[in-house]
Image (cartoon, rainbow, N blue to C red; front, side):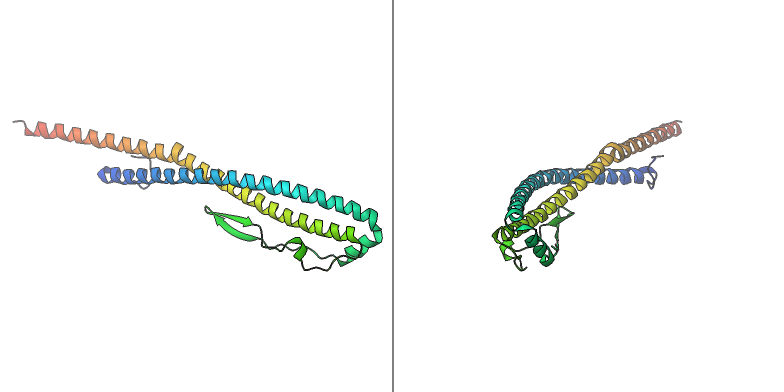
Length: 203
């Protein structure tokens, strides 16, 4: 008895277990390489998420400064008129597959000055605030895509590490133990058979 479901008895079982063991070891090696590649990609994505986070913080700070200027210089009436003309930002993310992981990429979008919406009613400060908030929105989209990619790769890395541990700590040792037990049983049977043959050969 090998304790492995589906293993045939005897020599066929030994060959079956050896094939399964070789396959499990090969699978573990492949998954270990994938872990290394995902870990390197995670570091790259962490740096990208940090950089886009800094860009977003800078763009947000600049937009808030422009908003305060516009509030002082243009007044509440200009804000109300600009809000009435405002259009919603719609983002259509692009998707890519990175080492078998589906990740968001920043969408192609025009530079803030090229966005096809009419300029807000009001003075130069309100125009500056609108442009600054378009830049901040673009930075937010880039940061969201970077964070999504990082989160997806981290999740894939965790799952792949769990698979490696399952192979290395459970499945491969079970196969090795089953192979050792089957080899020992066969050796014992062969030894007993040899003893019977010697006894039968005596006059």
